[in-house]
Amino acid sequence: MSSVLTLEPVPQDKKKAVAPDGVDPVGHVIRYADTPGDSARDVAYPERELPPGGIPAYLEARKSGARSFVLWADPQRQARLATLVTASADDGVATYRVLGPQGEPLGTFVREKALSGSGLRTRWTVTQPGCPEAVGYKGRIFWWYVWWLLFPVQVAIGVGSVVAGGGDVARGPRRIFWRTGKETPLEFQDDQVLLHAQWCDWRLGAALVALLRSFDSWLGAPWDDRRK
Image (cartoon, rainbow, N blue to C red; front, side, top):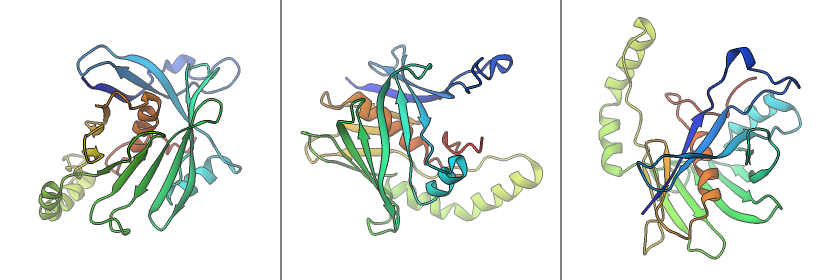
């Protein structure tokens, strides 16, 4: 059986948008279901960790693929579950480290952007200590061919959407299967990360769904690109 991790916005009461201490509430929550279709429970609250220079510096750094965020165990920010930091980000290749609450390594993600040396598709590598390396590619080759063949039509629809305020542009293929050679421990589809292998650390899966959703295309809604 597979467990499911989903990133969702936290419903906000506009009348209570700011806490009495002046600190904004956490804006997103990661929910965990033991199996697809089961009721999910809140397990983590992702939030950007801003570098010196604040939001402008973070937004500038993320253009190169850099990301940094914490997964809180509670909306009051009292305990950390994990922290994601960028080890390096250059020439379309970024390496991220996921650390536990005491700074212990939980795993590593490597993102190799399409056409940056890894091939025609974006390549994601997930490594967990003591476990086999898992490699996944964004989308299937067939659907990428279909999408590119329809690209001129999508451009026309996009222009019409801007002019007329209507229309719906298809997003590029996004599904990812991670394989180790013997099994498929992870999967990303419908904005969810599915953990198929029992050895997968769910905290690493939570960090992965938050990281993947931060790379939503211009048609999506990256949760970490707010300017406030």
